Length: 289
Length: 339
Image (cartoon, rainbow over all chains, first blue to last red; front, side, top):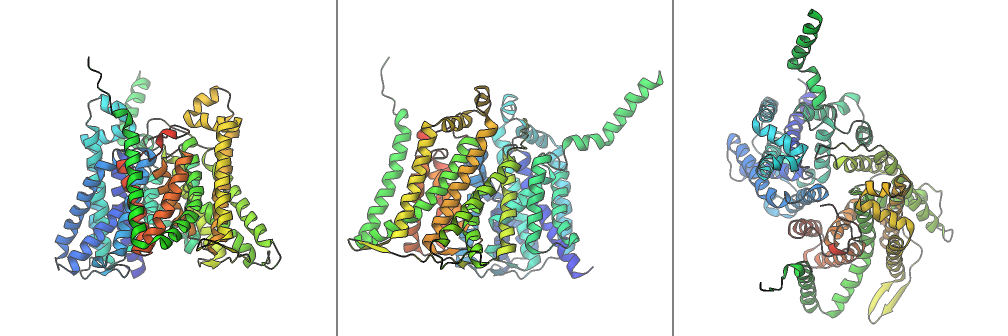
């Protein structure tokens, strides 16, 4: 496997985990525009643990994932009091504060960044990405996933139905933070270097866009969105800034024509085997007379 | 039944006064520490900077107040004005030496911002299909505006380069007021910004279009039932947005002489913070917020150095959203700010 290809696949795996970290809160109705902040926490946490405390890889990654999740948990309380525009602004502000803090603090290397000694290769990344995707599929199939979807669809009705909306939202936000942190930790160990300038607001914006364009109604959405927007520019050899112009244009077109995203619940249901069996049974029954 | 006077009615006023009190106390402490001369200089330059933030903040607040739409393209429109004006000079269409040519370049820049704003309107709001039953549907115009942000900013990067450029206006006069040196262009721009915003406030309160805008802000469906032609009035918001952001960009270019494809991001941050501080949906709140943020920025650069500003402003914004999301002047908002 060429170095270029493995590089692209590594970015794809990291982006996928990050995207699912944004997807889980979004599926519960919360837009997190500060994902880069959580990724930075995961990345810098693991960088520090690895280079200063000299912990081995299989401890640093879960540890920084836990830290990111914890910060997500703590942040969720004030942030979840807000809705709509305010939530977007609050999460955006959080991302900027984290990036600004890491840029300024000499403890974390300041503007120079930190070197990460331990290296993690593509197989580990791929394993983690696949596990995260499978876990999310499982999560959305549980009762918790159903409750999340109900909160997303209509919060007022969910409350009336006796759903503990606050708990669901806090849990979703925490899981999202933890996953974003995990993606950061893997990024740190794969690239062997972290710098604060990388975790800027544009990174948060891009990943949120991957998820929203893919569709937040089903678990396939982020997979489709991230894969398309990570792989397509490479495949089409569009260079530099034109890549983003095309990306921007695609976003505008998507929001005009198909704002619910590429993959919707209706689309999945139409091709689901259960539905096909039902349809065949109904059609077969009425024709059989 | 005892008639216990309820303090709850006065809580917003108490909160706002407390915040203002803290700010004034901080200013006084700073004044004593730095000396009156330095303090006056810092406050004056803070107010000049604040006039620019305030104009952009008003653009944000207008769009959110009327359309419930956080328009991320506003900082880009700000940047477009400066970069287009510089581009005209750089490509030779405008020669600096010809008298007021630089003003023409800036005017073209502002016009570009307005056109870009109308483009955004055409492709976000016109095609908007609100689907009920999805908590993220409010994000659709916001996401579209992010798309436009990417398009505009990267087109500028492609055609005009990524470097910071000089746009030195051949016009520099200073006046001295009691030991302070203030540039005439700065005073003019401050006055201009205030005039524009005051006019906007007047328009909103007294003209038919202004009333229509306020009605749409309260409830678009009711407005439409009452005979407001929503399709004709909404573009007005975008024209005003383009004008405000454009003029702010032009003023910034004249006053600081530097343009870059990234000049919008910085100002956008502080304008959003100013808007939230003053109260989303309130024009006078944005004005006050703009000036406050301007002064805070100047002071914090003086005390902590240039790098800290972003963190201070964003941290302040996060704090405000957590503690008092309605901002200082929420009660005077001209439309219901949708929380």
